[in-house]
Length: 328
Ligand code: G3H
Ligand code: 13P
Ligand code: ZN
Image 1 (cartoon, protein in one colour):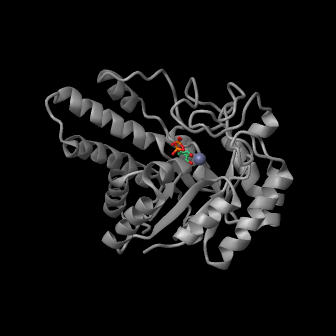
Image 2 (tube, rainbow, N blue to C red):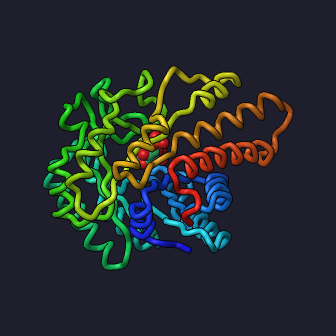
Image 3 (cartoon, protein in one colour):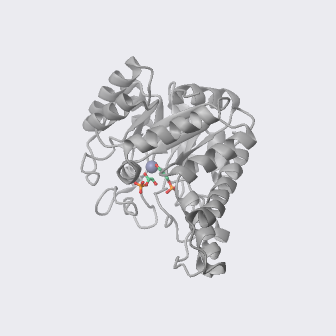
């Protein structure tokens, strides 16, 4: 059934586990996530970005997820809008039937300029007001996603702050987080701790100076009645990078968020873990391998099948690793 995200995150908090939120853009990704969830008995959060809506079209995304809900009646599914840039975008998603929305007020509507705190409060409050009336969950964001190695905002997927950022901007302030939650009454809060979107997060395996899991603990201590969310949480597995390179891809040396660090974060109150890049890498590796090994094949079903399987393997691993398995 389609459920609110609040319901799933509350259960995760009561039972001390985390839930991966996977980005979806097409049929094979939706199927991969549902098969993995079904085999591990896990609750599902599927999320659509602005880019996903542009690629697939809102209607197609809605009915793909609706098809997943109907095909797996025993698995609770959240249809979440990722990184809504304005209250209007969130209202549109609610009207379309999304059961959860993110109002990302950390940036202005242009997706490049860091928003003042007052602006973030204002837009988030407005979304909470419209969403809660109809039982829809709201995620907000405080702090600016970006790298503590380069002090640059998130750039890879085209939304992220321009220019050099400060430590204060790149790490969510615990006091401000508590104030933000009290004033907005939102359900879930995305925080900045040194992660960024895409494959190029860290130039080395991250240590505490560039990935601040300890900051999560400080934030969680003071936070009333809200769940924490980690964006940019793909682990960028080295074996997937190696597969892509082996079959002609060009991927530079890079590191993601290690699963052990996410497991630590879950102990400190993180309940939703956003993952897109790992599925992209898995599908690309499988497709490159298939076409490399079978140069005469041209039926998309033949290469999308191993791609779907590779995506499913990643999803299953995360459901097991985050303790989601068994909680559907
Ligand atoms: O928000 C970041 C997700 O990875 C979605 O990326 O905007 O390219 O769809 P996208
Ligand atoms: P990754 O790029 O690390 O997969 O992060 C996805 C994300 O945060 C979507 O909102
Ligand atoms: Zn994100």
